[in-house]
Image (tube, one colour):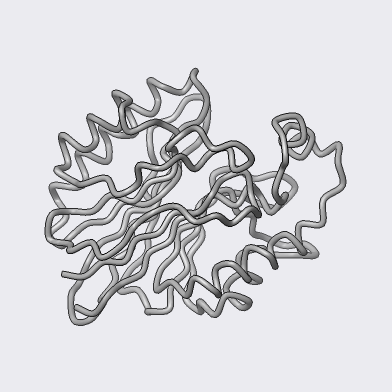
Length: 244
């Protein structure tokens, strides 16, 4: 298998880069006018420069209206194959997880994750890369301290799924928990996957939390992995270059 470049990024609904916690709050509240089309164009420019084979995105919007972030990113970032799994819908427009790829997937389908406070899902993608079939699970686990027990249930669901997968496995996404957390330690211990990201990714204006992750099964050879300094969201993107 030739080198496969993976990126994961929470793009903050296209609201742009907040320079402080108060600006982040104002952006989410809708009190500050935001040019999401211009911000998504900046996201696409960063992605195009990174030139990934596959990218998972969290907090992306799609649906009818003046501007569809998923279609725009697919076009602007030159990633023709895309799939969207909505988590929330309001006035006909949805936000959720998406995957975009240069390579045509064998299959994309969503998996619902346990949730009470926040609806969450995982996209399971089967991809043939360099003659090797592999499976990528792209997700966004529950946020906030109140969702800790939800995250544990979500992790348990992933741990039930992974042993049934017959190919090498990658997990990408915003996991909303630290490498030292009970949730991530449980995921790594039960799945036997290796965490590749150790540098803080959130908040982008003053990173202190290692929330964004790429985890891989033991079959993968890791050539490079880390966090990218792209200030276009409230999260920094993460990447990995892999082969088998």
